[in-house]
Length: 339
Ligand SMILES: NC(=O)c1ccc[n+]([C@@H]2O[C@H](COP(=O)([O-])OP(=O)(O)OC[C@H]3O[C@@H](n4cnc5c(N)ncnc54)[C@H](O)[C@@H]3O)[C@@H](O)[C@H]2O)c1
Ligand SMILES: O=C(O)C[C@H](O)C(=O)O
Image (cartoon, rainbow, N blue to C red; front, side):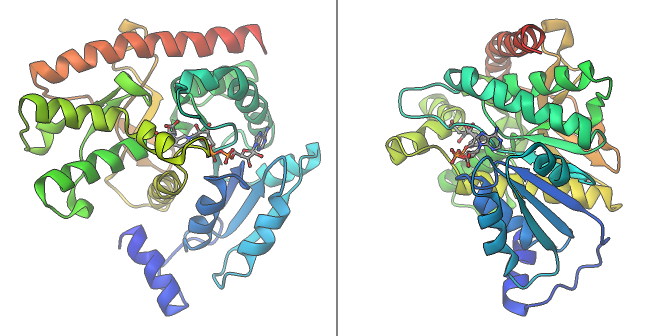
């Protein structure tokens, strides 16, 4: 049963019927924010989650108190920004989602967030490496192309890096690519699943429409690709300085967490696009790359190659790899200089 169906079922039936393991603790770091709150709400509605830890530099216990009244079985606890609060929130977590950090304003690129968010993610990664070294770490904070390599460096420096358990969440790009093609083709977006590879910013986002069997030509194809690559900017503009995508991101983050939980609980063939430590383009300076990844009880089970693409898509990929290599290099260098 799909997650959205489970959510609606939960709300309507007041009880969950899913056969689930009872020990999946999930932590959200940045739980009071624009993404953190709806993401925590969706996780509370997920019967696969037994315990929710909600941490933020401000307001974690308030959000937790509110969400804890929802009549699903999981327990919820909020944590304040004390060293013991963060440690307690993380201890025993199977999944840690990190949407902590500042969002863009109009005119900014995701890379403009680097100076603020790099240290936020580094410090939270240190706490994760100490208190939950075996958890699946899901990085949402931008710029994802750099914050994921920063997290890897932190885990490496503490001797606990497991490349199979670190994920940059790029699900929103696939959600958008699927929704936008359904608008053009008049199909049900729930049945679309467009492959998107690369990274998570501008030209590093590469939708592979040809693999879905659809064909767009000329300006129509250019416009579609541009909309997928710059969908985030659409929301930033529309919010006029009040932040970036939060609700759609919460849905995407909850979907990815659900997929990891399904895979951990024994379901086979769970595939999600995600930005991981990947062999695919290491020879071009990209130690991390988003492609379809089969998930399993140990995190990354199998990284799928990009597959057959058109000459048009190859050009997009070439531009992507150049930009992405720079973003990754920047994150690694910063983490080494700012341990
Ligand atoms: N990966 C994606 O597809 C994607 C999509 C949308 C947004 N984002 C990114 O997610 C991040 C959060 O966006 P938002 O709209 O929720 O921002 P927001 O400002 O609404 O919320 C961020 C939250 O992080 C908290 N925070 C800041 N420093 C912290 C720390 N050291 N420890 C714990 N919490 C801390 C803040 O108190 C705040 O509650 C941004 O960097 C944004 O660019 C990524
Ligand atoms: O656009 C942003 O800055 C937020 C996020 O990365 C998005 O794709 O919506």
